[in-house]
Length: 472
Image (cartoon, rainbow, N blue to C red; front, top):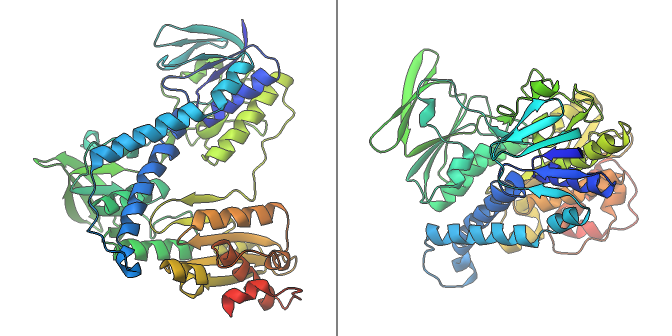
């Protein structure tokens, strides 16, 4: 019998297998598809490649402002898809995870089809593979939620959108969270007419309110039709040229037609065919696998990590979860999966947006918070690059001077927020951050300037004035 079977080879599963192997356990890694899971094959890697192409189109249209004469950029989508395939292949080939995992003696089973429990210590896959183990770690990830209204079979998922072989003339996107916003932004750059629907009062509802407002305004200026508080979806129907969506608000029904309709209404655990109940694994009221602080399920011999648990659902946290779950599966439940205060989140839309820590609303509800904001139309590097849309907001505790949150919209937002996360993890006071000698003129310097602004507002002493150059 195998010591540990890891089900799923995304970031959580890869780390779980590597950790279990490192600890000397006889380990098997089982994946229904390709090694690397969604992150490498249908998630951040191919999506970022598409977003990069969208960014290149945007940048090409700016060349004339700098005296560079070129014709209007045109998109050869088949060539772009070929490039995306090359990127995915190269990332997979260059990944050291596989060689590291195999070096620990882990057996990797790819393309097995769906795995399911047949009893508490046995799984079977569609390919006929049958494995028995003392411990299991479930890392099967998530799947897109689907509508339950008439005609929902005519809708597409975000994964379907990324797999399109041509650019649709028009797309309906229902759900303006991170996934929906990214689909809308990328295909808008490629030339699709985008109808973006959000049931709530603002797009990007988990972001700081100022971030939502700024991105919504930028989307509208770029031609995306953003409709918030649109009501409820009644049904979908097939048309000669695509699909029509019917929706109602206050008893009044409307409809809109497009080539495809993408449902980006949430993420669910990928457990439908796993039959976790056969192993004694319970599902929580949100539909995800219930785990404790050690990532142990209701069955003491089964652990879970990554999207399937409904926690964070981001690659860095999935990696951490895989490490913790494997450590506890092999050594016994002793290592806790800690919620990280400084866990940066961002998206490569146009404009970019990113966050780490508390929103302004949450910080003010919790205590006495100071908020400092610097807009990108007043910072040197953004002016040089002609990317003056957006802002950097820093939220600081007035008593401790510790940074509670950072929110950025605009060019390099994701990278700027990573620096704020490092400062928060190091427990730097905002006055300490303001005195770091950041290079000028840089995007990192924007963070230095807003830190200096907050320091000045707190009436704290600054020994060094370098970051004030941004505000000179």
